[in-house]
Length: 176
Figure (cartoon, rainbow, N blue to C red):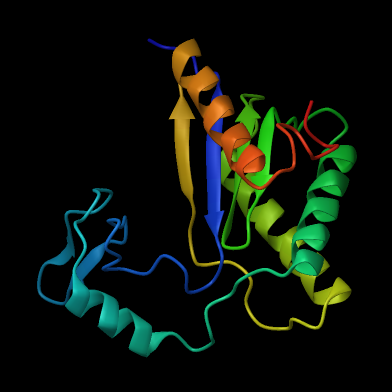
């Protein structure tokens, strides 16, 4: 059995990656008679489903301002410090519509960790900016990484996000 090296965690801002998105989506399709249809599968884009999702959202889609991104960065920094070595981050980018974190395996429940990070970053955005609505979408995208080449590819992918924005490979102080 392969050993888990870590996780590639992605969290999108509210309203940015809706069911039906043309890039594909992971949203579970629900049917009242048969329950979930093809859960945990990448579904193709569907303009009708996307329109329906857009009609159901309660708040405008969120694009994080520089102040919001700074609040998220500071909150993640504090989470790493509070965890006393339990949370390490090997690569990160905080974009206006999502973040990517590459987290080494530590034995902690990654789903609880992701929820904690979302909670703490939301509180930081609400405390530090004028934004008072939802920050993140429901759920997350989390890939378990089992081999070294996948791990290296994830680091390079995340660092390219930062380079494209002119920030250098590792602009965040919480990245070890």
